[in-house]
Length: 381
Image 1: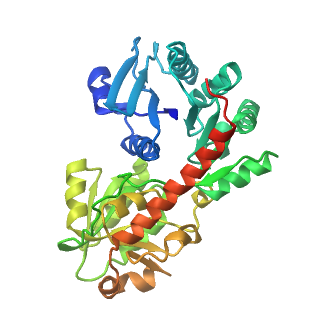
Image 2: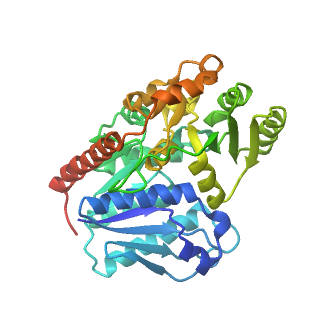
C-alpha cells in the first residue's frame, strides 16, 4: 500500500530551509520516522505529510528520504502566530494537492490526535472515501486544554470515522469504549530505532556510571528521580541530563549539588549524550507507578535504551509487565531499599539481542495484522 502519515516531522533539511529549529521536537521526529520505517519494513511506501511550524513559508517543500519514504513539508501561510486553524488549512491543502496529483493513496495514518491531522483525515474520508487509522500516542483529549464541547465532538467523529486505532497504552482504548465506540485496536508501546534491529549488540559501558536522560517533570517521575539521586550507590556516579519546568529543574540541580556522587548536566547535545550513554554501565528509566501518565502514556525511552543495547534500571510497574522478563531489566521494588545493591544486580543482568529481536517481530506482527484487516475492507482511491 501507499500510506500517507499525517504528522509533525521537522527534518534537518527542513530546519535549514525554513529556520524553524525552535519548533523541532527530536523525540517526536524519531517516533514518526520509526513508525515510517516499520511500515517500510512491511513492504509499504510511505509519504509523511508534515506541518513544519515555520512562519511565512508559502510553498510546499518535498524531501525524498529514500525510494520508499518522502516527506512533504506543508506551507504554513502564517502571519503572526501559527494557529491551529492555519495548521489545519496547511495540512488540508497539502493532502488535497497529493490527491489532485492522482497519486495512488491507499490509507492515511493520523499520528496523534491534533486537529491539524484529525480534521484533514476526516475530510479525506468523507470526500474521497480514504480510510484512515488513528495512531493515538497520548491522552491529549484527557487534559484540561481539550475539554470544550467542540473537542468532544471531534473526538467522537474521529472514533466513528477511523477504520482502526493504534494505542500506546491500553487505557486509551478504555477511553474510546467509554464514548460508546469500538474499533479494531493494536496496542503498540513504541518502536525500535532500527526497523530491522540487525546487528544489535550489548553496550556494557566502560565506567561505573549510571545515566538518567530525559524529561523529569512531575508528571513524568520528578519524585522518583529525587529518590535515585538521594540513594545513589557508593562507588558509582549518577549523571543527570534533561530538563523540566524552571522550578523543577532548579530543584533537581540543587539536590544534585548536595550529593558528591551525582553530576547534574542539564540539557546536553546529542553528541555529549551519546558519549555518556556509551560510558554508562546502566541507564535509568523513570517509571513512577503513582503517575497519572500510566493510564495514557508509555515510557518510550525504553526502546531507545534497548536499541542501544543497555542495561535498564527501573522500578517495578504493571505498565512494564511485558518487559519484566528481559534479562537486561533491573527492576526494583523500592529505590530506597535496592538501588544500593546495583553492583550485585548488574552481575546478573545481561543484554540478550534475541529477546529484543522477538519484541521487534511482535510489533511488526501486530502492525501487519491491523493493516491487513484495514486493507481488506478499504476503498482505494
